[in-house]
Image (cartoon, rainbow, N blue to C red; front, top):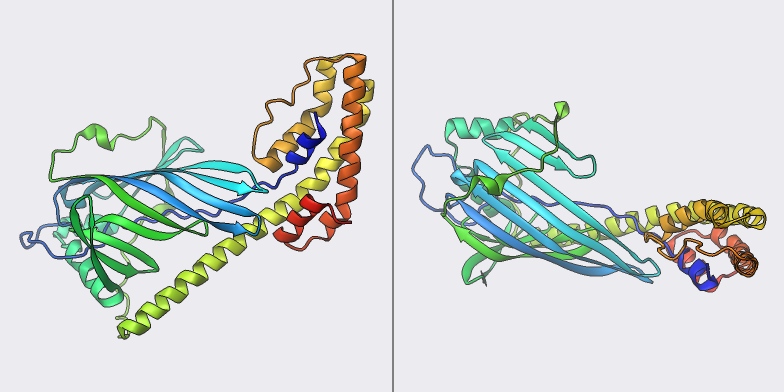
Amino acid sequence: MKSSKSENNMRLKNRYSYGIFLALFVSAELFGASAGSFRSYGVKSALINYEIKGTGVLSKENNLSIEGRGALVFDDWGAKKYFAEKYIESTQGIVQKSRTVRTLHREEYGNVFKVDFEKQRVETSRNLVLIDAIEKGKDIYQEQLQRLQEKGKRGETSSVLGLRCDEWLIDSKKICYFKGVPLKEEYMLSGISVTKTAIFAEFDKNISEDTFALPEFEMDKQKGFLIEKMPTAPAPQKQTAETNESNQTAELKKEKTTIVAQMAQGMFEEHKALLPKLLQEMLEARVCLENAEDRIEANECIAKVIETAELISGQIDKESEITVWTKVAKEAMLEEYEEGIMDMKRRMPCIRGSRNLDDLTACMQGGAE
C-alpha cells in the first residue's frame, strides 16, 4: 500500500439526493376523442426512448454529471403505461464516485407496480383516482391542458425527431409536449440541470405485452400507498404571465440552492465522521501487521482499513490485497503505514475543526494544521 494510494483512499465520498420526475398526464393541445372516453394522452399508444444528460457544480472542487436512458410506453390512451429510467451519477474532483440509479414504474388500469431494485421487490398498490377516471370515462388529457393554461407559461414551438412540440414552463420544469407526450424535459435532479430528450418515438402502433414486463421479483403489497381521491383544490388566484414566470424562476433557483446545500452538508457530516475512524483503524492495523506471520494474517490486519477507505472513496481498491509477505515486504508496509498515520494525524486538527465541505476539502488537499 503506497502513500499516494493512502491519500487517494481519503478522497471524499459523495451522497445524493434523488428525485425522479414523472410527467405522464400533462397535455399540450386538444385532440378529438369521443365524449365519455377515457384518455390521458392525445394518442392511443406510444413508445418513446429518451437520452438523459446533465452536468453541474457540486462544490468548489467537485462536479457532478448525469448520463443515462429512459423510456415511456403506454397503450389504451394511457390506461396502461410503463415508465423506466436508468442513469449514472458521477462525481469528478476531490470526490471520485459513480452510482447507478434505476426507476421502473408500471400502471395498468389502476393497478400500480413500482420496482425496488435494491430490495429486489415489486411494490403493488391501486390508484383509486385513475380507476374512477377510467370507469367514468374522464378526459384527463383535456383537464391537464386546462391546468397548463391556468398555471403554466407557454413557450416556443420546437422540433424533436421532426415532430413539432409546444414548450410549457410549469412547476419549475420546462417540457415540450406532442399530443400530451413529453418529447423533451428540462428539470433539476441532484442539484444540477438535466435534459431528457426523445431519441426514438413511435405512435399508434401495437405494443407488445413483453414491453410492459417487470423483473421477476417478489410482489410486496404496499398497504400505505393507496392513492385516495383528493378533494378539489381551490381555484388558483389569477396572475400575470410576467409574475408567474418570475415566481417559477425564483422557485427553480431556490430548489437548486436547497438541494446542493443538503447534498454538501450530508457529504460533509459523513466524511468528518469517517476520517477519524480511518485513522484509528490504521493505528490498529499498524500494530497487527507488526505481529503478522504470513500474508493471510497481514490481509486480515488491513481488512477494516480497506473497507473504510473504500467507503470514503466510493471505489473498490483492487490493489489492496497483500500477495507477498517477506521481511522486506513487511518492513515496507510498516513504513508506509507509519507515513500514512503521521499524515492523517497532521490533518486531523483541521478535519475536526472543519465546518463545511469546502473546509474539509481544503484539509485533505493542503493538510492545514
